[in-house]
Each structure stands twice: as C-alpha cells, then as structure tokens.
Image 1 (spheres, one colour):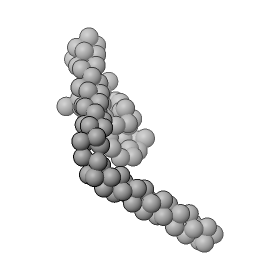
Image 2 (cartoon, rainbow, N blue to C red; image 1 turned 180 degrees about the horizontal axis):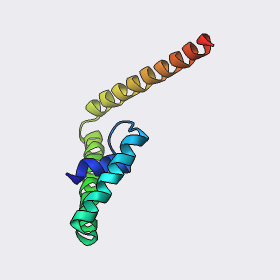
Image 3 (tube, rainbow, N blue to C red; image 1 turned 90 degrees about the horizontal axis):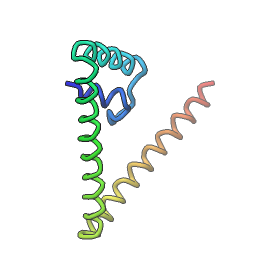
Image 4 (tube, rainbow, N blue to C red; image 1 turned 90 degrees about the vertical axis):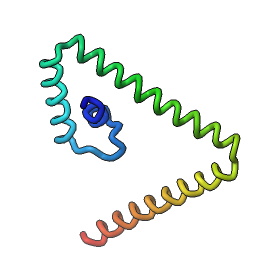
Length: 103
C-alpha cells in the first residue's frame, strides 16, 4: 500500500503528478505513519526505497548488457527513443506556436 504513495511523494510515478495529488499523498503517508508508529513506518519506507532502487539498477544493468549482447536490438531501441523524442519536441513547438498565434 505504501509503494504507490512513495512513488507519488518522491516523483517516481512515471508521469507528471499535480501538487494537489502530492500533498494528498503526503497527508495519507503521515496518517499511516501515525497509525503504524514512527519506527515501523521508517523501516518499511526505507525497505521500499531499497527495493525500488535495486529494481532501477537491475533494469539499467540489463539495458547495458543487452547493448553488448545484441547491438542490433539496442540500435533499434535507440532509434525508437529518438523518434519519440522528436515527436515530443515537435508537439511542444506546435503548442508554443499555437499559443503565440492565439494572442
């Protein structure tokens, strides 16, 4: 139950989270901390931190290993990421142009 709250509070939700949502998550964490007790809460919260960090590190390691083992697949992955980046940049420029045009 604390993992989603941790992700929202710490900014690892994978998407942009509104300030209201972050504040609500903080309040819920404080409520759970009061019910569980400070010692237990800190222990569980730090365990969640360690688990998620290990998961991210393992994913990073697998990506680096895949780049060495299968360079063609890695090249395709990089091209896919670059295409996404270009599309996002193009969309951002269009919204800025539309905003300027609406003035």
